[in-house]
Image (cartoon, rainbow, N blue to C red; front, top):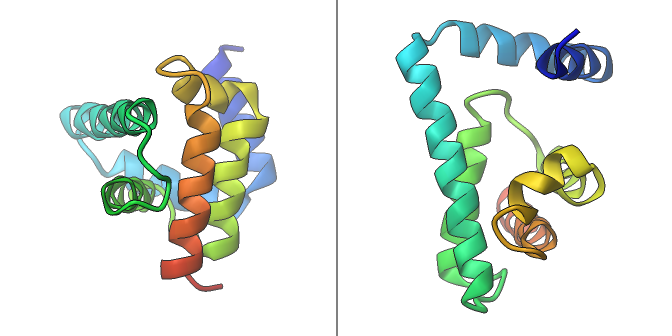
Length: 127
């Protein structure tokens, strides 16, 4: 079984409802739209890392705009509430598979993103 298959199985078992919603949304996109969607996500990770490296505050207007864009990007897959969005941010720090997306850009940027996501969730999301 390939890594993506393992991740799919894990997601399906841990979050069955969200997995189904995400799969339905993703499969409704063309291959080109899927590629573009993932490019947007990768660009956001790089922008967060640059903000971190330039010593911006996690609560700054610029960083919160990037987190808002991240939240909107996530909503292409599922719509997290406050707790689940904070939980996702915690996975970016605690799960090495997620952390590497940020840490490969700048060591410490996963924790920075988590802090920024907590601020965004507290200010903009409800349960």
